[in-house]
Every structure is written in C-alpha cells, then in structure tokens.
Length: 200
Image (cartoon, rainbow, N blue to C red):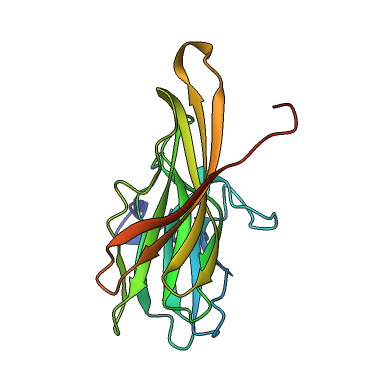
C-alpha cells in the first residue's frame, strides 16, 4: 500500500511533506538451494521489517513470494508461493535431481497435512506435475499425513517418505516409497517398504 504525500499549505506556498516508506521499500531477497548445474536457485522475497533474513529460515509472515529463478538473468522459471499470508508453506529444502531438470519439495497445508510437489523442466520453464495421488496405502484411516521427498535416485526417480497418524488412537505408520516419472509427468510406484521404528 502506498501512503499519500502529506501536503501543507502556508500562504501561497505548497510544501510536500515526507513520503513514508512502503512495504516495497523493505522487501529483500534470499537465494538458496542452487541446482547441481548452478543454473537455477530458489529466490525468497520477504519483508525485512518482519524478518531480517539472518536466520536459517525466513518467518512465514514475512514471505511474499518463493520462486525458482535462472541464476544468470534472474528470470522466474517457476513460482512456488505468491500469496501474502498464505497458510501453505514449504518445509525444508528443495530436492534437485542430478541433471537439474526435476525438483521436489514438501508443502505443508496446515498442521495435519504435508504433500510433495514436483516440477519438471520443459525447455523454457519448470512445470508442475500432477501429484494428487502421490502416496501409498497407509494401512488404516489417516488423521494426519506427512509426505516428504527424500532424494532423487536419478532423473525422474524420486524416493519419498510417508508418515501417517491414524484416527481413534490406532497408531501410526511410516513408509518409504519410490516413484518413477515419465517425460509427461505421469508416475508409478516402483518400490514400497514399511519403516520399522525401534519401539516396534
């Protein structure tokens, strides 16, 4: 929001008062998570009046947008978040494939749900892949579910971890599973195993 210039009339003279700072003046950028080939990186735009950017993570209230940019010219090649005060937020770091043509990240949509988003390079920009069903059967009735990318085994092949808490106090489960994407972004699960905890 821009503040109006204060105007003071003294006789026939017109004096302009100070122009107050706007949020735009306090916006800063933080570059992180550079791709393996050094061509791309994550740019987080944030309000330095809320967070000075000195910490490992930027306060969610301060974030104004999160983009993937081309390092050479700062061109935006994918937008990840572009809403002030949006509840959804990125958890952890971007996971890049070895060839820098795929990336994945965990997106929290509240305290009960975290999903994984995946993007693929199309030659001009990164496009989101449909990950609506990017999960495996949890073995019960999920109350909370958190799906996070772990690592890329190779371009197009991603390992994820799924942690589920069931309704009615019926325990929890953790699965690690691997999916393979084709060039059109379609995926299939090629491996799945339950992770046993020490107290099981």
